[in-house]
Image 1 (spheres, rainbow, N blue to C red):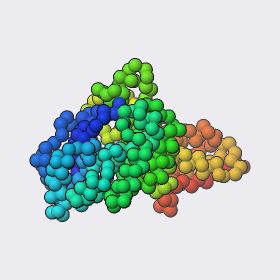
Image 2 (image 1 turned 120 degrees about the vertical axis):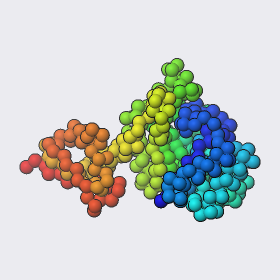
Image 3 (image 1 turned 60 degrees about the horizontal axis):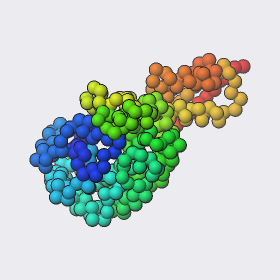
Image 4 (image 1 turned 135 degrees about the horizontal axis):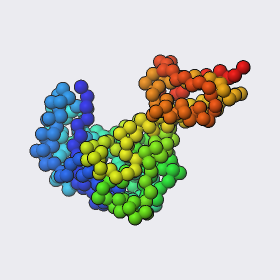
Length: 339
C-alpha cells in the first residue's frame, strides 16, 4: 500500500513570519519533533500503511533554512527508511530563497526526491504585502535549479493574499505553469487566529474571500494547470481539528473547497461547450456528458451548476450523464431545441 507519511516541523527554519501564517495552527502541532520523534512517527505510520510508503514528507517549515546539522539529522533519520526499502523517497517544502547548489547537493545525497517551493505569488508587490521576504525571480531561479538537479518540483501558490486580486492571481497561475512543475498546490487565503492577517482583517485593511469566491477563481486557475497537464495535488487547506474548531476565523476555509473549485471549472467547460453550439433557443432540453466520476461536480453543490444553467439559457430540462467515453476534464453537450 502506498502512502505519504507527513512529518510537521512548524516554523522551523522560517526567517520571516508571513502575515497569513501560523504553522502551529495549520499543522496542528506546537513544537518541532526531535530526530527520535521523527523515527517514531515514521515507524508508527508504516505499521498503519502495510509496511511501505511512497514518501516521507517534511511539511510546515522552510526545511533548507534549518541549521545544516539539524537538517541532516532529520534527513539521516528519514534516509534509513529509504535505504531499507520501506519508503520510496523523501519530500520536503521550503522557500525559494533557501535553495542553492550546496543545499541541493546535500538533499540529493540523503535521498530526497521531491522539493516543494512556497511560491505563493509571482507578483512582487503581493509578496511584499504578505511579508514573504523573497521575490518572484527567486522562485524562477530556484525552480530551474531544482529541475537541474533532477528533483521533482512542486510549486505552491495562494490566492486572495493582501494586495492581490483575481487578475494578479490568474497571472501568478500562468507564470507558475510556465515553470513546468511536476505538480502544484493551490491555497486560497484563510485568516487564522494569532497572525498579522487577523490584525489586518479586524482593522478593516484586509477583506477575505468567501469559500464561494475562492472556488469561483479556483475554477479559472484549475483550467490553466489542466490545460498544461500539470497535476493539482491539493486545493485548499487540509482541515484540522484546531482550524475547524475556530482557529480559522474567516476566508476560504471549507472542507469541500476543492470539490467546489472543480465544480466551478466544470461549469466553465459546460458553458464553453454550449456556446459553441448554434441556434440555441430558450426552452430546449440540455443533455450533458461527463466522465462517470464527475457527474456530481458537474451538477454542483446543491445542484448549483444546474440552477445557473437554467437561469442563463432558459432550458426546460437538464440531464447529466456519466459516460466512460468522456475523458476527465471534458464536457460534451447535446441540445434539443423547441420545435
